[in-house]
Length: 222
Image: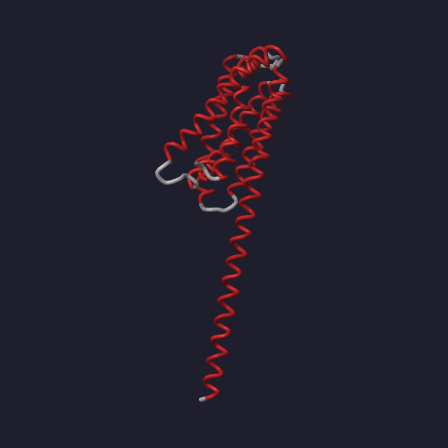
């Protein structure tokens, strides 16, 4: 149904998106009523806009850059790590400016991660099954986000914002660990391909050397 690369990409996104699914329903409440200095419904909206603005400004030029460069998995890990740091910033924030910082980091991480993730996913789609495989992705992540959206509100009401943010950060870190498995697998594959290419070059060189020796012997007999 899906190759291993797609399964790892899907699993990573399930963890990352469900982690942020814990936060999204409660973030505006946290900013407004959670003891954040300067936090109001207006500044909560501005924080959300700051995230989208940063993501939009980063992802277009970066998407153009990453299409022509190797090491996509490493950029994906870096972006996801930046995203994973956001719940920790929320956890320690006591000023709206720290929330703004968190949203800029979130936008930067998303701007690095999503173009790279989409590129890796797209090149692994099976011809003739693209719609179905995209449906698997959106169904899986949608159900995970829906479940954690309800759970996030319940956890925040029963255990507080801090526990909710820690759980979200933990889920994002697990998503990063999944990507490390993907990066190691890709590095192994590249090493194997490089070894095969070297073997072919050595084999061709040996063949040409033998051919030259035969030519020299033939000319000496003449």
